[in-house]
Every structure is written in C-alpha cells, then in structure tokens.
Length: 303
Image 1 (cartoon, rainbow, N blue to C red):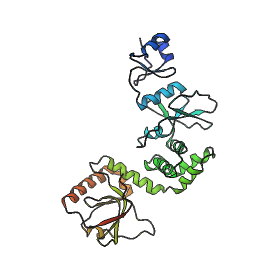
Image 2: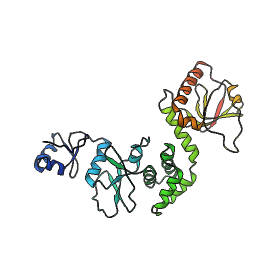
Image 3: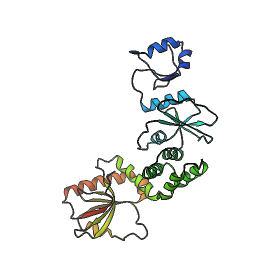
Image 4: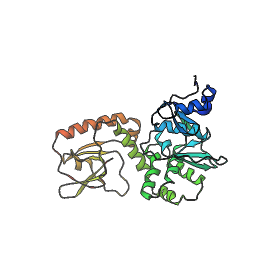
C-alpha cells in the first residue's frame, strides 16, 4: 500500500486511501476496536491508534472541510508563537457560498471576507489581526476581550491601526464590546511589555512583578520599575516616563541598595540577548547583597 500524498502527521482521507487501493471495508476494519488506525471525522483517518495532537486535529479539519477553509482564533495566533490558551473548538472561516456539516469540536463561521491565509505546517491560518478579533468576538468578559485584543500587539504581529482597519472592514453587528476594547488599548505599553517578556523568555530567572512603584521605609515613592524582583530588590526599567508621571531620579533607587538595570525599547527590539544577559548578571549581583529596605505599591502581578 502506497500513500505518497500522506502528510508526515499521518492524516489521510478516505479518497486517498481508495486511490492507494484500500477499500472502505478494510479501512473500517483497521479503524475498529484494536485496529492500528483511528477515524477522526467522516472521511478523515489518523494512521495510528492514538489521540491526535492539536496540529493533527487542525490538519484533519482542513482535510474534512476542504482547502478553501482558514483556521482562525487562538490556533492561528499560537501558530505564530503567541502564548495563549487553546480553545476547546477549532475556529474555522468558511466561504459564504459553502455549506458545512456540523462536526463535534469544530466551530465553522461562514464569511464573505475570507482572509488571505498563511500556510504553516500544511494548515492555512488567518492573519494575526483577524485571528485576534475573531477570538475576541467569542468572549463576553470585557477584561478577557482586552487581553485578547492586545495579544497580536504584545507579540509584535500587527499594529493597532491594522486591528482597527480589520474590525471596520467586517460586520459591525456584535462588535461593540470589541470596539470599546480597542479604544482602551495602549499600543506602546503593550508592545514594550511584549518585547520585555520575550527577552525574559530565555532567561533562567524567576517571573518578576510588573509596573511597580518602589517606596522608602516610610512609604514615600522613590522610583518605579517596569519589572521588579521583590525577593532580592532588582529593578528593571525599559520605558520612558509618561507625561505627567512622577520624575524619579535613578540615584534615589540605587542609594537604597536596589540593583537597577536600564535599557531602551530599541535595545529590547534589536539586542534582546544582550539585555537578557545583563539582567542575569544583575540578578546574581542582587542575590549576593542584602535586600534593600524598600516597599512596593501598585501592580505586582507576576507574569
């Protein structure tokens, strides 16, 4: 039996099997109890008896519904390296003229605006802006919508203008919450925070707290940290102060014994490895010295 067109993932259609000389009856036997294969969907078979991976499930969805469908939502973002939770269902965009059967685990949405797909691992994925908006439209919680809208900005995959343009080009029905979320987005802050997390992703450092105000022993603010390691008193600043923000001098922090690392957003973008190496050195230095007698206020959410 030769299946020259079978993908490395082992996903094959019944049509391909028939072309290879495998009858429907024999395929059903191989997919039966104790058999070496598994039927994932009507007409789509996994050539091994194991639970499919997410990628295999996506490839099976394309095999089932045809090459003109596009995978959107969380899977399209994850395919580009975004660290976001996978959804229970595979979110598919289908041309408006198509009729697709209901299938467990699949969420097909017909649209007159099929996006230009990007092929990754044999799966056509929607552009980041479209994927994020499609995902956000499924949410009801405003805080969660804010988070999802920020994802492609956070990972540097598109701009706020591209998100707005994509939203304006689509159906306005049911988009009020997403439009409100876009008005709340601070693209500069989101982008900078995303670059910082990318730089830290390869570091052997614990997760810091973010956006922290540092105070002296009496509770008076003396500085701020974009990222803060409280156990050892290490501060990292990578954003320029906003207009109207308190003008803290770096010496006020270092005078307390706080170890301070400073860099620019441009350095985060161009030389993240060098920034990460400096953070590792500073962390080791801070760990060797007594923790400074400072307190913190503001957001201390660990990433």
